[in-house]
Every structure is written in C-alpha cells, then in structure tokens.
Image (cartoon, rainbow, N blue to C red):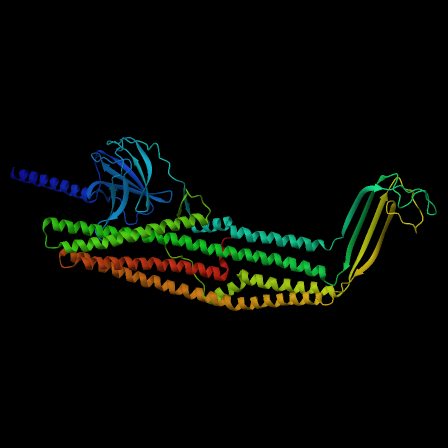
Length: 586
C-alpha cells in the first residue's frame, strides 16, 4: 500500500512538473494553444529589420498583443498582430517599429490617432498616416475570438504612389528630358541637310507660268496695221518656261557636301549620347540622394528613440528618489534630445526636397508620391575592372571622341567642297518655252521673236566658273581653321578623358575604403554607446557621457551612409567618364 501511495505521489508530482514546464515553454516561446479573445491588426512597413514573430506589441509601454507573422506584400513588409479584445484601437491608429533599450529587441508600438471611432469587430478600414516623415500604411481588420473574421472594407483612397527602381528611373528621366528631346531635334535637322546634299546629284530646275493681257498684232514681218504704241484688241495669253540643269562634274563639291552632311548626323547623335549621359548621372545623384535622406532620417529617429527612452528612465529614477540620476542629468538629456529634434526637422525637409527633385526630374504630377524601390542605401555590388580597361573603354565609347572623329571627317570634306569653287562646274541644261496669244499673228521668221507666241526647246552642255577675287580662298581658309579646331578638341579629349577616368577610378577606390573605415568607426561608437548606457543605468556614468556616445554613434553612422552614397556616385561618375552609362540602358 505504501508503495502504491509513493508511486501516486511521484506521478502527481511529475504531472504537475510537466504541466509547469509546458506552461513555461508556451509562455517563453510565445505560443498559443488555446484561443484568446481579440482581433488582428495588419501593418505595412518599408522595412522591419530585426522584428521577429512573437515580438511584443505595446501601447505606452504596456503589452497589448503579439506579432503573429511577417510576410512580403507588394514590396513592403506586412506585419500581422493579435491584439487583446479589451484593448480598443482607433481607426487611425499609428504603428511603428521600435527597439527596447539601446540595442534591445524590436517591438511594435501603437500610438493612438486623433479619431474617436474605435475599430469595430468584424470590420475595418485602410488609411495612410504620416509620422515623423515615415509613411506607414495601417490595415485594421477586426477579428472575433473563436475564429470569427471580418474582411477589411471601405479603404480610404490615398494619393497616387510610384515605387520605381533606379534603372526604370533612369530610363524614364531620359525619355521625358526636354534637354534630350532638344538635341534629338538637331539630329533630325542634320538628316534634313543630308537629304538636301543628296538631292544635289539630281536635276535641278524651275517652271514659270504666266497669264496676262496681250495687245493685238496682225500682219507679217513686213507690215502690220497695228503698232507697238497703240494698244487695241486686247486678249489673254499664256506662257510656260521650264529649265532643267543636271550637274555632270563638280570637282568634289557635291560629294564633299554629302560626306560632311552624313558625318554631321553622327556628330549630332553623339551629342544626344552626351546629353543622355548627363541626365543619367543627375538621375543617379537624385535617386541615391533620396535613399541617403531616408537613411539619415531613420537614423535620427532611432537616436531620438534612444534618448527618449533614457529620459524616461531618468524621470523614473527621480520619481523614486534613486541616487542613480539627478536633475542635471535630466536637463542634459533633454538638451541633447532637443538638438536631435532640430536635426530631425532638417532631415524631414531634406527628404521632402529629395522626393520633390526626383518627382520633377521624372516629370511626375505634384500629387504623386515617388519612392525608391530599394529599402536601404547599399553599395552597388557590380565588379569594377582595372583602370587600364576603364581607359580603353572610354576611348572607345565616349561620345565626345565620336564627335571629334566624325567632325574631322566632316570638316575635311567641307574643305574639299570649298576648294572645288576654284574650278569650273560642268553641267547639261535643257530648256523649253511655250507661249500662245490668239489675237496675234504667228510669225514664222526665226529672226523675228514674239514672246507672246513662241514654241522652242533645246539642250546645252555648259560650265560655270566663279571669279570672286579672293572670296573662295577666304572660305577655304575658314574651313581649314574649323578643321584644325576640331583636331585640337580631339587631342584634348584623348588626353583629358583618360585623366578623367583615372580621377573617377581613384575616387571610387577612396570611397570603398571610406565605407570600411566608417563602418569600423560606427561599430566602435555603438560599443561606446552601449557601455555608456550601462554606466548610466548602474549610476556610475554621467548623462553627458551617454549623450556624447549617442551623438558620436549618430555621426559615425551618418558618415558610413555618406561613404556608401559617395561610392555609388563615384561608380556613376566612372560610368559617365567611360561612356558606359548610355550602353547600359540600351
């Protein structure tokens, strides 16, 4: 009997222990094995780095729910949260991802909105709310306990929103740029000149038609009752004169103009590529500038959160009369927090200006919100060839060199065209003349012409030689000077472009090194910040030391973002210097 009693007691003890262990596993693992009364909240964020399922959802520091799942929805992170039924949320509640402590775990903080209308179980709405310059889309859908779910209805329309990649932004900027369109019109003008030069090979002529009154003329070549001074018997006459000239040999004039016109088309097309390269570079500067502004703003928000949390701790110490803090510490922290808020205001202004610049450069309407598709500012991962390969590519692709090379051919052809004026231009001409006046007698004597009644046609072989006493020589010298000017531009480009490529390449290497150096700096600043925070918490450090550490971390992290920005721009400058930027979008 005793043995059975002992076994019963041991069994009960083991059962209780298993139940306790299961409860701890469930609570610590943040699992749910039974339904709880509540509803679900969905929030879309640009990034939720560090947030994990099971993370706490808090209002004013009080836990009101948990994160159930994190999924990707239309290039945004959708967070599904379960909220206790006794917690009433307004329909315009604001969600944000925060950190506990200086480097603590992430959690979701819900802040009440301005509406007094609570979320109705089984219903919901969608809204767009701006907070601290960060766009947060909060989808609230009520769910009853025991599995009841309601679909979100009546989504409030928000402003049009464009999420665009860097490549698409570059393509659109090139397509809508008025500068590029203007230069492309110059290509069309060059093609029109080429058409004119080609037409010079074909017969050129004119046709003249006349209709007017003719005085009466009767009789023959010997006698007539009419005189030239007496006008009588007026009637109408018509006359048509046609002249055609076909060049035979021009000593290179026509071929020179044709060659120059053809090369001019290539020159103008190279100018289009040059302008496109400029637009691409400016688009990248604006795009990366927007990413940099977003990173800086998020950094300032993070620093402000850290200071706000430390201020809250210090206020708690003072309320409890703890010796770990005093009024001076609180004032110092509040002073630094005010400075951070001022920087936040500047960051928000910079972010809005960057968005406005990108919107304007892409020719988007004012009411459209434009956002980069990339969530973070990261270094461009493309491999970079050595500087010799970069120089060789620049000498092959740069549009300025194309302009100079084609311009040399064009100016040489124009020189030959002007020199042809020293020699006669041979041609064949045909002429036809028809006139009819009914009130005038037709005279067949070839020695007595009558312009009112005539019928003649003929063809001749001829030449034309201009004698201008030095004008042609001056024109030739003018074209020779243009040729020498273009040749000097070509030599300058062949010398300056490799130098420009090497400069961009060295700046790229410097920026790459600065990324690593600034990363080491801000990682050490973070360690300093953590140590300073621990010292303040233990009462052995001063608030100023913590503020200095926080600001040092912010500065080093901002320098790291700046280094990444500089690296991406240096790579964009290198693409511009080599002429590779245009080839990449084709």
